[in-house]
Image 1 (cartoon, rainbow, N blue to C red):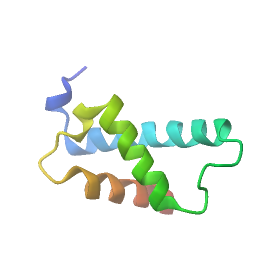
Image 2: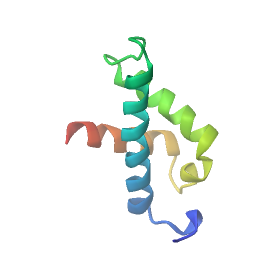
Image 3: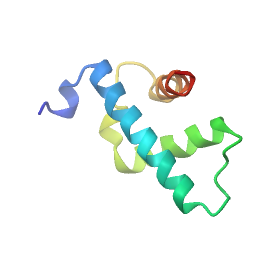
Image 4: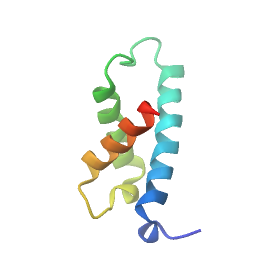
Length: 79
């Protein structure tokens, strides 16, 4: 397996999207109705905070991380 700093952006995107899908499902399962289903912006913000706390190495990229992550998630939701 490659070191995190050697991952291409497309590889990093795949990992982030996999984490996003798992995180979103976990939040739905555990939320008892408080999870903001209606507000994707809030979901992305909470997920980004999760990445900062648990997977900061994934945010080490040449572009600004937040807009990049937000774009990846938006593309995943649309597909």
